Every structure is written in structure tokens, then in C-alpha cells.
Length: 116
Image (cartoon, rainbow, N blue to C red; front, side, top):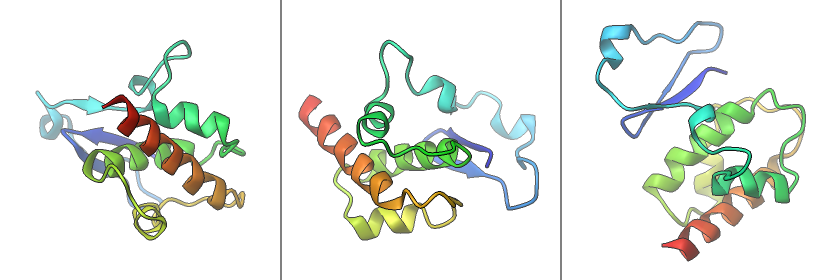
């Protein structure tokens, strides 16, 4: 899954296609990928929560889940389980770690709120 956040909105490719954003469409816009979310020394609260909750399995879907959750928490700092599930509906994960993913996103939401 190719996933990035541009100016606060998620940009994702349809299944089976490359990222469908041309360079002029994103010129002079803020683009954030997983690489810019946090560092090994200073992880983003979502990254730290995913480690603490052991929410990642194979890693195939993690970029999509983390970037989708970033947008979700930016828009809704205290999402319900249903809102998290709805946000992640288009991200394919076959590992069965869904409950841990939801737990990690809620953990990160609490951490972000505590820092505010």
C-alpha cells in the first residue's frame, strides 16, 4: 500500500495501481510519509504505541495503517473503536492483529492528549 499524507489529507492508490499523484499536483505542498513521522530516537506516539502494544506483525500494511491513523488522530483526537475501524476499512491486513492495532491507536491518542 502506497500511503502518504499531503496537506492534512490522505492520498492513497487504488488497489492494483501505482500512486496516482502527478508531481505538479503536489508541488509546493506538505507531503509526509512514514519516514517523516518519527525517528528511532524520537518515535511518533503512534509508532511507540504500536511497539508497546505489539500491534505490528509482518509489516505489509503498517505504512498504510500508521499514516491513516495519523490523519484520523489529527482530525479526531479521541476516536471510538467504530471510528478507527471505519478509517482503516480500506487498509488490507491479513495478520489478524486488528484488536492490537485498535488498542495501539487508542494508546497513541491518550499519549497525544496527555502531551497537549
